[in-house]
Length: 324
Image (cartoon, rainbow, N blue to C red; front, side, top):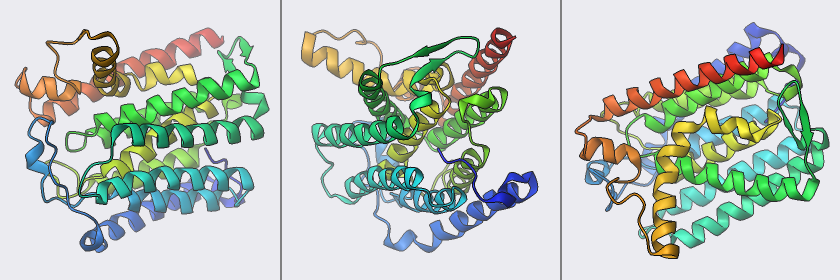
């Protein structure tokens, strides 16, 4: 999302110290602000949803704010990245207001908000990055019409926001899967210099999520809420666009997509076609594994991350082979 403009951050040591500073600020800010953050009301339809009742919720507002400040500063406060930062904060704020609400927002209201922010991100990206309006496979680049790209990118961002949001149901799952994906975004970006991957930006997001995970390990005391999951979803989508090929998100975010989108597909089929293709599957899938397969939260977290690592390693290896 943000390239490095501050000269000293091009030095690995200082870049690492910069990310460490973001980690420390987040790690100190979350407990300091716990009293002003909302409390979780429990999730009525989620498996063991009542266990989260009373926990601090909405910590995503803290780590998203820290990330945006550090990332925008690293990029030299250039207009493009200020716009991305503002939109990321806007998406986070919509989730935070939902976190604070006594009654959860209507799903259509949230869906429209996500779509609007997705469109704004897509328009900004298309304006500032005409060279990335393509599907870049390394050996072959396929150009995409600007307005077709904007439409598809908007849909893609909407899907990623909602997939990540739906996956945030087990202590540490959303955070660890996010870091998992970000690491392989970095690996792919490093292998293909022209794809625009940004190490400092990825490092900052990993740092702030890592600081949050200090209090979200099982049994957790703090939850990121929609404020965090929706912001992370937008960021993962935007970074996939920065890689030059949003299709790379399919293998690198496959567990997010499979876990989170299962419920969306199930509901859509029931409402539109009056048919349930996943009648025997509880969604999100992580709830199915816990309730119907008797897996613990730790087991689900390990299985999901292990499978994602294997898929990502194979995909990056394949792309490196095709690049030769």
